[in-house]
Amino acid sequence: MTRQADGGRRTPLSRDRVLRTAVALADRSGIDALSMRSLAQELGVVPMALYKHVANKEQLLDGMVDVVVGEIGPPDGGDGWKDAVRGRILATRHALLRHPWAARVVESRPGPTPGTLGHLDSLIGMFRAGGLSADLTHHAMHALGGRVWGFTQELFPAPPPSADPEVRAAVLREAAVHYPHIVEIATAGAAHDDGSVVGGGCDDRFEFEFALDLLLDGIERLHRQGWSSARHG
Amino acid sequence: MTRQADGGRRTPLSRDRVLRTAVALADRSGIDALSMRSLAQELGVVPMALYKHVANKEQLLDGMVDVVVGEIGPPDGGDGWKDAVRGRILATRHALLRHPWAARVVESRPGPTPGTLGHLDSLIGMFRAGGLSADLTHHAMHALGGRVWGFTQELFPAPPPSADPEVRAAVLREAAVHYPHIVEIATAGAAHDDGSVVGGGCDDRFEFEFALDLLLDGIERLHRQGWSSARHG
DNA sequence: CGACGGAGGTGTACGGCGTACACCTCCGCT
DNA sequence: AGCGGAGGTGTACGCCGTACACCTCCGTCG
Image (cartoon, rainbow over all chains, first blue to last red):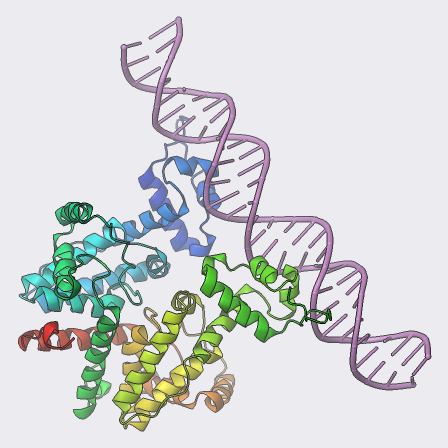
């Protein structure tokens, strides 16, 4: 299997082929059935061969997440920020629904992948383009967290920021090249209270209550209006 | 170890002791370090001994979830439904924060445990006591899903309802004894559109968009008011 | 009092997992 | 012609969950 018709040699492995096959296998057999061994078998190769293309299983899962994120497709530049954000979040949901294992895997990653960071960045860009302040956008992103991906609390546990402020600034400048909006939000959101710049600087409890109250206030409003789903759905 | 001072025999295992030790071990060493073997060692016992008290590791995790849920404590009957719900959700958050592994474990369970069902039921009861319709409460619970536990989409994948309507009704009556509010919500929410009674009857896409729009509308309102966190937090 | 049955703890063993490490093969360079 | 390195192989190790047969000890009942 995976040989060319003329009896030539096996089509070679590549990181990309490994990741795509892993996604297909997880789609077909469930994420629990995805092991380095089963994936290797699927590719007609011995398990250890995979390690020439992915460092370990964790990195394999990271790569699979980015494959799914890649399927979300580009923003379609709707009318206002609200429609744009709404559309993009629904597109994300559809991508995750196509791969039932994906939501759980995204949540289980200990840190963000380049793909998820890019996705977050583009979402933040939409809010900012719509004129929302960096501050409000920051909280909005936290509040929507669960709708964008399904993660629980903190978007991601902040990596311990380097002790050396010079190093920290350099990391930040590097990140800003790829994720300008994320960096803006992270610095704006945190600078005001303790001067620390990235991660750690934002108050989880505040973010949690912000989102909670947004929902409770909305529910209260609907209740007072005598809202009923029959009139809408 | 785990022997009594007088040299008597080992204090006996019990389901409760197994679960509590598992929680303590996960707190101390992380959920990844919790294996049937490590837990057995912690208890001064051979791994297979655990299987006399829990059916398998899945059930061990279910039990641990219920231990954490049990720590949430009773509702404190605040002023209105909104404060009551708010307080209870914050209490839940604190319980989950005390056990960093808990949120992930709750999310990974394939179905609800008695403890989580009871918790959900009490939350629903608060909304109903506050006068919200079963309909609105149903959607509110979905919207708050991520804030209550951290789960993603559907609260839980509905178990395939029995084909026999008589069996279904019996199951429902049985459930209503323990979780009256859940049953009310489940039947009220679904009966209006296709007559099916439990699970499957509620439209995931609708619930998702309901919550999403609640948040986006709230964010828009804050934006128009020129809201800034400096004036609040 | 003695036999017994069952609850609870033990020992061994199996199949699966991720992956370290040494190896071999074969292609493209010089 | 020879070499080096990228990519695939084989073997092995230490974990995991748990099936199954066993043993031990206590409470019950004849």
